[in-house]
Image 1 (cartoon, rainbow, N blue to C red):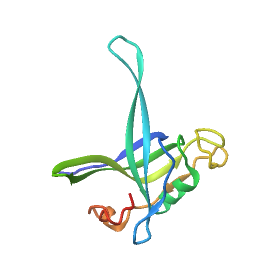
Image 2: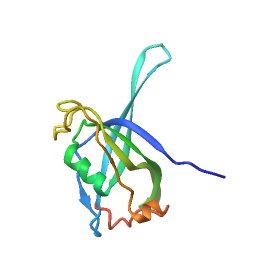
Image 3: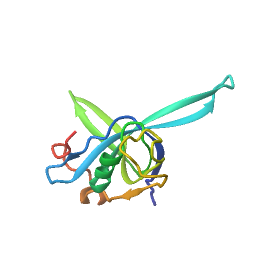
Image 4: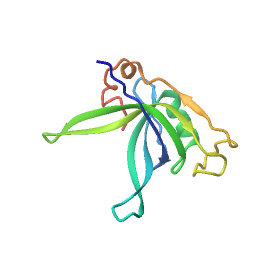
Length: 148
């Protein structure tokens, strides 16, 4: 049976980007993305619903995000879902997150909360494949290599 794992999200960063590097020298960052949705509740009133999503960016994409984006910046992320599982104090835990493969900065100068200067009204795209282990369908580098 065929499978397909692709997600496209448009939202705003929930915090400033903190760039880190693995022991192997690969740039990595984990950004928080807030995605808003409007829908009617049972009484017919419009309500905002926000979903918070963790997105991991690698290599040049992570560096570009760190250089040009800040809290509140609007971006489009295309990537795939990944389930991380671990055990803490004998209790199994898991979290669904997105591995970003393509990032597009949205908005223009002075708009969208980016204080680091996305030039003019253009929309810049950055794509970078995840490290070899990620793109080969294997798990991410060991936890001791990911600096967060």
